[in-house]
Amino acid sequence: MPASAPYAFRVSSPSLTLTVWAGSWLSGHASPDDVIDALHEWAPMHLVGAQDAATASATGLPERGTVDGAALLLTLVRRIDTTAGAGLHLVLPAAGDVRALPAGTAFASAALAAGEAVVLGVPGTPGFGLVPTVEGPDVLRWTVFALASVPEPVVDGGLGAAEFAIREAVREAASALNGIPTVGTDGRRADPRAEIAEEVAALARHRYPASLPPRAVRILDSADQVAAILTVASRGAGMRAGSASGAAGREGALQPLWAAVREARLGAVAAALRAEHHR
Image (cartoon, rainbow, N blue to C red; front, side, top):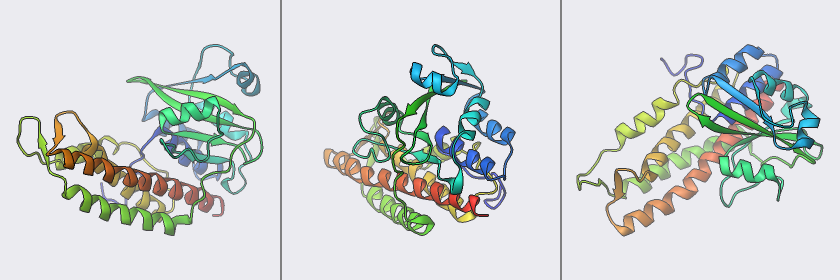
């Protein structure tokens, strides 16, 4: 499929899928069914459950167990103040980078463990946090957390800054990783290009709304390409660095590049939501 065709691009996580599709729906550019169909690409069954009794009371979810249906996520999203996309935020935390998470909360711990979450609500007001976890090949569970006060989102510099960051990451990834010899466990030098292609193909069935600005989509697509390279480079099964120094070099090179990927994704999504609400 040509790169310019609608829906040709990759989405890297369920949280990113929900954020961009819900944003498109709230701005009038997609239907509820479009959002649900996109979520079902991750799993045919979505279970939604409250983290505790207080959250259950605030959301109408049962205190125990879960309810089946991605449509329930849209009910929660619909409650937020959507002015200029202010109430919908993607969160991509990692060790050492827990910005936009309310410190010391169960939500923060769950989001950090998952590496992703969606925050619903205007900063400084009560809201909700949604964290997806895989419960099987066909089941994705969303745990809902009540937030006493929605934290400020990660500050982004718009599409220009996000595009610059990911371009730098592409160059640095090629430079750093090319200098690290990699061989298979059988002692033979391995070409990682096939594995990188597999990583990219695994995300090819996920799609972005056609309403997203093309520049944002290019940034997100580049971030996924870099992420595929980093995933293969950090994979231990069947591969090992050619030397101890190579292993240390690879580890040191990957951490800031992963940070650049997260920054690019967050910046592109935030800018895309703002653009859609002003169209």
